[in-house]
Image 1 (cartoon, rainbow, N blue to C red):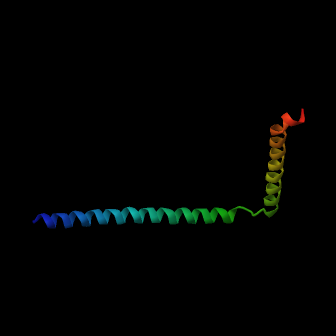
Image 2 (cartoon, rainbow, N blue to C red):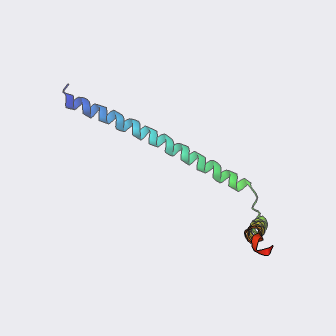
Image 3 (cartoon, one colour):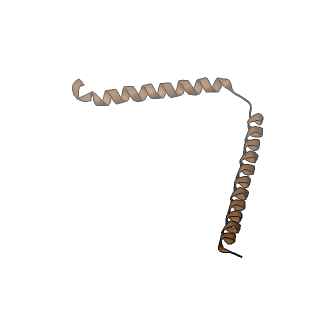
Amino acid sequence: MDTSDGRVVLLLIILALALFVAGRRFQSMVSARQAWRNSMRAVPVKRQSNGGALKAVIVVALIIAVAFWFLTNANRMT
């Protein structure tokens, strides 16, 4: 067996191992996606809660902005 033949065999083994690992990862990704899709179907959709959450975020942001403005301008008010 020549040294170049050994390199070819080693290259084929490495290539086969890489393809095996990639295939296992792909299989795991497909299984996870399928489980996620099934769990999303099981959860009831609540569209109204999205609007309430957005309102809460906006209100909190406004309160923080007013508090920040008040704290930065406290020197000028006194």
